[in-house]
Image (cartoon, rainbow, N blue to C red; front, side):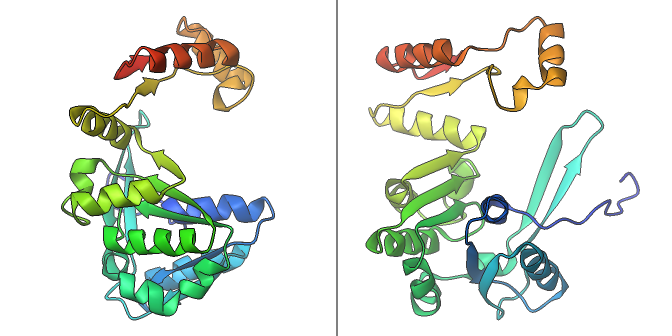
Length: 239
């Protein structure tokens, strides 16, 4: 708040959010990695246990990672992350301590945010070797990922190993610019709100959108526009 006090503490983060949603849908979930044996780590592990996320976590890190999220009255936010032990987790530790857990999974999700890129690469390599589908949350821009988390070659290797990439807007824009600068195909599309489902389909959302003079996109029309944009080789478009 305005006095610098924490308003609310929550268990979350890129990968934990994915696992929490999957667990609530009835899927079997587990997380592995590194934390410190400290209050923040115990808080996180207790949250996992409350909803049934199994954890195989090394507790020899310097400190458990955490993030501070600041939200202003208009809803704009800023997130400051302390990587702690997450940034210390190595590819060698993945292979020695958690390879069997990866091999047992049907879907493996990781992130480009706090983990070293070499560690993410090892996780994805093990997942592919076991026949698992891989998902990468590209949470930071390419400029923030390299060199802070590793090299450009490591980042590109991670992206090639991902069956599904879930980028932030900044990461998507950077990825499109990077590929086009190398003469490779890439298109970024900024869609408006879609009709017939999703966050913009509730009565309140539709009323707000309509009050701004906007019309929700019909899915068939939006997909046709996407096909046209890609076919034209456009680098960036708004639909």
